[in-house]
Length: 491
Ligand code: GLN
Image (cartoon, rainbow, N blue to C red):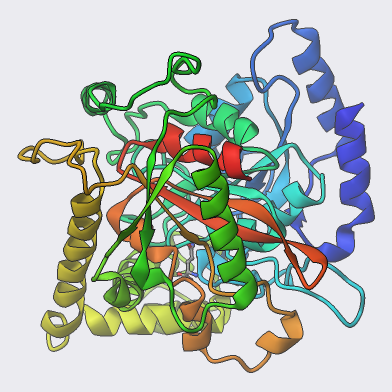
């Protein structure tokens, strides 16, 4: 049985450290059996789905890989977990990650680093922060997995592990019960081995949740649908349009290639895979167009101001009194309480989390806010406007958009997910924080603009050796099915 095979491979691959906690195996097999026996042919029936450990589950701990939450079990399931269970999915375990989602290699976890291979000389980064979910899917420990993507944490690990990593448009999937890192950017994302499977999971989660104030209400969802329906794409008579929400044939598309992504630091293998993807698309009748997104070069700096600022506020609640683990001491008086807070937070948070809290507290402080936080918000708006200028589809969230379908505009963008192939864990030792931040250069622009983006593996032969490289498709807000569809054609 599929579930037993998955679990056996998870047990064999413990050394990869993809999971923080696993359910009781016999209880899990019973759940799979029950789901299959109901006879209800729900799309996720009996499918094993792993969950990143910053998404709340009532039956397994939720630690966000942090010392401060190491003994925390949520009293409830996150909405996304409820939705998966309701569709027949079975939770395969909680996956390892960078603490609170802060990192790019899944090495910053109190449970130890995740890796992909253990030939002792080649322990390779799984990407981060959702590295455990990516490895669990790549190594067939489960059928699909959920991660979270704030600035690339689903797409980067997908690129490094040769899986599909999909970050939907911000607001489509509920964040209720998802531990906040930077809530204006946090998006639940999906890992799968094929775009069709990612689509199936997405369809189960793409629903308004009244408990999440940033979840898109039905009125906005229908507005998106009507903007999409008016799009003047020309379907050839031999290729009928697929039913909405399914991957299928595509009409000829205008594909944009952002010149700013062709940076000098791009590894030759990555550039080769990018070119190969464009060739495949051109051979299949799509047209390729150069576009310019001039604010891209400021996006990374803006992200690393905004994300820590939001984090410093979101993480203030972990003080040992309201949440999480607590250092010894009394909270009886204001003096002892502040000692207790400082001790709890000093012991509970890892170095990277502390760095982000300090950075965020600084950029929000009265003296610095104008020069940092406010400027970064302006850059964020410019990044959004860059995207709106190149996409033919008008942004369905904005009112006064010019008529779409202009010749110079494109339907989606194709670029690399990361500038390099996965580094070895050894090469990361002693790496400066800024070097790690640079990994996110191609993923943060879509995060700042809230756009749907998917990383898909493209096989490419370099010096006679076949390797898989992550390539990214980015679409206009709400164009989630199109980016998944393109991934299914190229990946
Ligand atoms: N690497 C980025 C960061 O550390 C992205 C993390 C994420 O998307 N959760 O902030």
